[in-house]
Length: 439
Image (tube, rainbow, N blue to C red; front, top):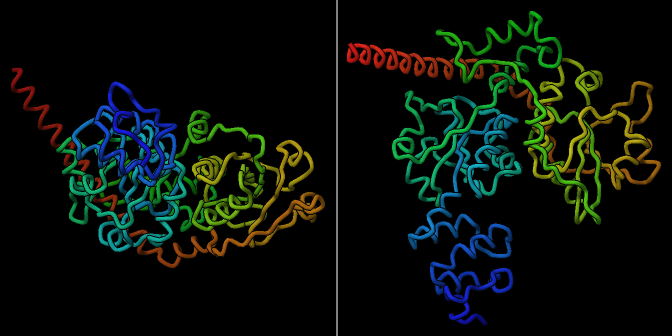
């Protein structure tokens, strides 16, 4: 293979950037001394020339029982990821920060239906949504609902990550009990103000409070009643208000400026309930250039409501911003973009191409075509992503299964409240025993 053994001795370490290639990795791993592993791992973390994924390399390192500090960087998140929203994305962002390689396990439709109730999205749709999240390195399709040590070992993962809420099986058991007891469980903060329950409620109750005055009666009724179990609201499933911060936007943003040679592509819309239809469209946009820099313009809530009507958008401008920023095909987001794609916007961002999908283009308030300027410049392109899923279709799915979703949410919240009550009773008992001991 053109590599001598003495080249990789501890006394004469190799230069991985010059000597390690995809064809040599297998040979090198079988012949190199363990003292050199950190060298190749660091290199492969930055370069994907090798046919080995980092996850498989870590499995190899584990078998050699060396460099355990390196393999602790591989971890897994397991979830249903139904109606993927920015709360899920924030969990994955936090999980990725705990290591270098993130494996995400996604449950099947059958598993979700058994333990939680009917999913809104199919498993194929959910797999692709998670793959499109920029912090995800690898997905495991059809991951078991109960996380075991066997699952972690099978995918060469040292620990799993979940939010600080609780996930229960159909019979009320903690799905992470085994890995918690063995010290292979990590926790990240749940994002307040968003849940699948809340989003489903907005669609079913047709409230506009999520993008208007949160003090009005509609919002309070929605917040107090939707999905409420017989023992009150669970802090994990109940509805609460999302508070956007500049720090959260910074955490989600790529922070990358366009580079020389990049093709700057602009798209605009509501991107409400960010879903697989949006992902397929943005992936198609991303493929329009060799070095794409995709900018998404998000319309203000009032603008979306003007051309969509009803209680649209389901998600407000702050929520939609984070959802879009989490997509791996997006480089930048314009928050509150003008509806008409005019000269100032095109010149400011030095836009090379403007794209739109096959969905209807509504006229501006004055009846003009919002894409008149890019069409005039010859930089407008209509793309067909071959995916006809829209936000309207998702809402229709929810409405058609209203009773099932309401029952699902009430059942889930009732189980969570039972756990909370049991934990409180245990805590009270421990306090009583401690007081007796001290006396």
